[in-house]
Amino acid sequence: ILKYTLIEIVKEFGLYSSIVKPLIQVHDELLFEIEASKLEQTVKKIKTIMQSSSKLLVPLIVDVRAGKSWGDLETYDVA
Image (cartoon, rainbow, N blue to C red; front, side):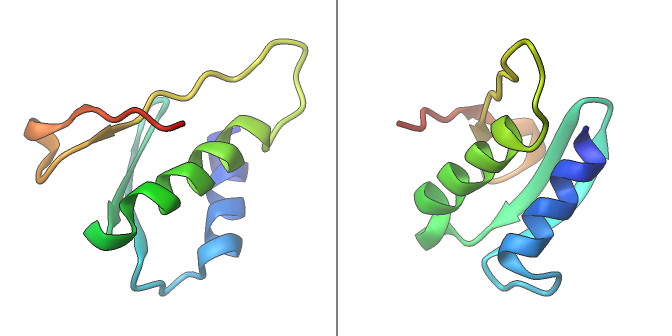
């Protein structure tokens, strides 16, 4: 599911986007570098893609965290 989702995200933003760069996949998590001025709108798009990329009988729950570094990540609420 994550690999298909990542493909959809790259299709949306482009492989060499200056706004969002996929960095790493760790188990069931994806880590992105996102331009600070575009954070909210980009996170909304990524969350929508992740929640709708696979049609399952149960909903896919996506939690978002943001921060300057991996160790500083805090919950980021997206409407």
